[in-house]
Image (tube, rainbow, N blue to C red):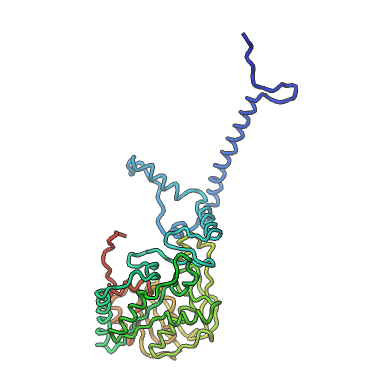
Length: 403
């Protein structure tokens, strides 16, 4: 019989058998993999709370909890544990943030179906937090009202006017445009130009033609300022709202309707503002990297104006301590846009109040007994006027999609 030949290299060259070498490589590979798995876990246990902070706030949802076999059916346990593991994966936040930032910065794309990345890094809201809003249809003019809907909207607004007229109280409607309309030149090419016949204009023109209710369409003043000041932003780049300059311009347009003249925005100075949690940056999980510059307009009715609000941020009270404003008491019902421009309205009136629309109550209005009531809605919330009455407040129909 032929002798068995072993796979090794002669000892004369000082090298070990190939079999021993393969085992050594395997051990080394195992050690490297073990270290790559264990070290991140160990490191995360020490510094994880400093890196992955505010995960629920960033993703705007409640994270999955670790399932228990005692309470979770065995058939559901694997998927439940998988959801828990994905939510609590070590270093998930910075890795997701890095991936989203590379997509945004290098590819000009958004990681959220609700947000689109526009030109020069601008972010725009095209999704829906509520089934009553659809910014992209607002932009394209695909959601114009029927005659029946316009009549319902008119009836609700006339109900406001008639009830307030009994108390000799003036009623005014203020409509703010979506950011997408004002900054359409920064929208992605695929979105095209905004529709000439849009719902915001449709509502304003219909109410002006069929009622005697003053309607302030703030788009005109905002668009004029943007055109004459192309280097100044009047909306946030990473948020859906107008900034303080845009808010001041909107407030000035409204007060002009009320007979009060406010200084031109150019005559005021800008000071440091309060931090803003940019909502669009949060939607794409980049709130730590994409931050809007904030400021407050100074030189008008400050520091005489004191504005306070409750813990929930839905009730605001304003007092002009100098007493040099309009003596007519102002009551504003509005959305988040009004919470930004309310400070400037409060400077025009010695006594004023603001309530966000979804917590409005008729008894609060009657108790304040105002001389002027302003109902404000941004373009994407105009549909709320179909379901808003002076007595019942905001009462939308059930969401057919169950959202």
